[in-house]
Amino acid sequence: RKIKMASIIEKYKDRVSTLPKHTSWIKHPLYKYEGFWFHQGFWFHSEASFSVEVVMALQEEFVAQPTNVFLATYPKSGTTWLKALAFAIANRTMCKGSNPTHPLLTTNPHYCVPFIETEPFLTNPCYNNDLLATHLPYTLLPKSVISSNCRIVYVCRNPKDVFISFWHFVNKLLSDDMSPEMKLEDAFELFSKGVSPNGSCWDHVIGYRKASIERPDKVLFLSYEEMKKDPKSEVKKLATFLGYPFEEGDGEIEEIIKLCSFKKLREVSKANKDGHKAIPNDAFFRKGEVGDSVNYLTPEMIEVLDKITLEKFNGLDISF
Ligand code: A3P
Image 1: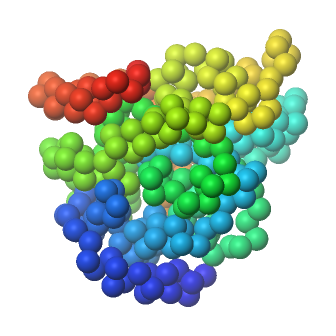
Image 2: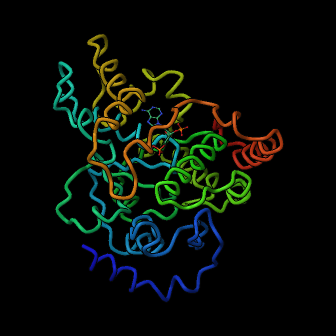
């Protein structure tokens, strides 16, 4: 496994060395590739996942199948929730009668839908799953994703909540690694400048939003806030887009919403000791609320982030 990843890192070494570089939220720098920031090489717990070399390798080698559906997000925008919902919808016969062996009741949704940028996916050619996930920006997706007309579901979230969720997530990883915490002010400085993994967060959203306007039959654009406010309507939309529309009144939607709820998924993740080697299962379930960022950000920080959001999303009809 490591050999293949190591060869990817080696192959793109020279190209990466020419990229603009910036200090980052952990001791490893970020590199700017085609307008977005990524880590390099084996940057965290010897993981090469999500690194810039992997992005380059995917662009050159990944061949999407027309049946693939990509679940795309900026990190901390509701990826885990979207994975759970899409998996439950696509495998819905498993949900019947609160089946205790349903994968979502025994494992983390990240094991049900793999990220294409991760090591297990890249090094396991036998992976055969129509549902795939990615944090790649739209413009950096491998060309075959677009040319094969694959469907894409994107979930966006208010950048203020994304930032606070990200900051907590990073500090959880750092504390498990016995490293000092990242200060909120330092994280804010980088995030608001657009220097964050797979960022800027705003440009990430814009790429998919524009694509959803241009190709609405292929790109479904959802928001975390709408999903919280009216899960039934949003899950219905998702199911129809995935090709598994719900029959009215048989209680199936409610069952899936409950199975994929924050409370249920967190309960399962706590009971499941079979975690990722670098990221503990429960790191993906913190509060699951809309607007928690006000409890951490200063009024000045809120003003800065709101101003960027207003300017960047102007005319794109994105509401939180
Ligand atoms: P908070 O840190 O604000 O609680 P991602 O899955 O993209 O990493 O995003 C993580 C965020 O989604 C975290 O936000 C997490 O608590 C929240 N989340 C995870 N599962 C959820 C669910 N089933 N419903 C709502 N929010 C969920």
